Image (cartoon, rainbow, N blue to C red; front, side, top):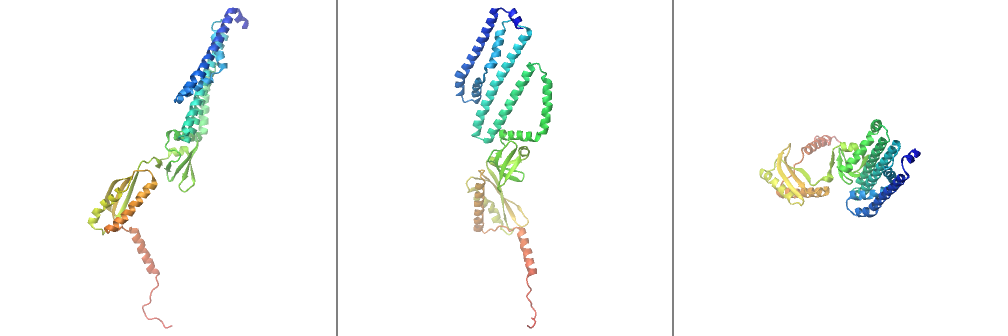
Length: 367
């Protein structure tokens, strides 16, 4: 084959081809040097992480991948056997594809690294998710490059893709719970239905988020123990996130006995409204004579605390309750005693009557 190449091409043609190949290689390396030594430092000063990532990718240029491309460019002026020419073309194309993959891989590594650092300052769990996404992105990239290279080498990738699909389905079925929790973890970190520190209620369990892992989320309950939720199950539940509160709606009722005069019943909603409106960070909604109960008249009050702070809400409600007690004493009003309390008192009295010793009323026997 070498003899055939030497026979079909003159010595001048061979020397020219070598010169073109060397010139191409030097030109490619000169471009690489200009990009890495001059352009990249200037792009690294930009605020855009995408621009910085592409600037970092210039350093991933490989001499051993530029060489086949330069050889192919130099060999274009020669008369070569069809097999040799096609082989050089395939090698040069594969080298070019792999070089693009190296650039893209370096850009992905740089971009995800910068994003991980940036997000770690805001949310540590988001940094973990960016690491996982970076690995998946590079896995997809190299899988595509491998399939393209195999296709250029003449392999039937249709059957390979089908086989990978069947194998992937089998693996996915085997680890579907793990994959479900993994993708749920990514959904939690990216969609942010809650973050570390949020107070949530899930069903009859509640607590503060301590950690969002790849498979589970850890919650510290009010009583001190740690609750562990599967990420997939947690996303399927209805979550009440109290950290997202902007204001808190409060409803409470006041009951007075049946013998309360009508004029005092008419004044009572205004009294309650005045008490509530004097509080700071409170917006009154309504105060009404709601209805007639089994043993009392009931008044319902609705107001908003203009803060999500639970302790502030309890302080305000406590102050309102104390002012209500003072207002009732001043107006000569009484709070209704629950019917159950009357029943308990009656039952207690009946029990005491049954167990009390009987005082003899007739004549006593002589001692």
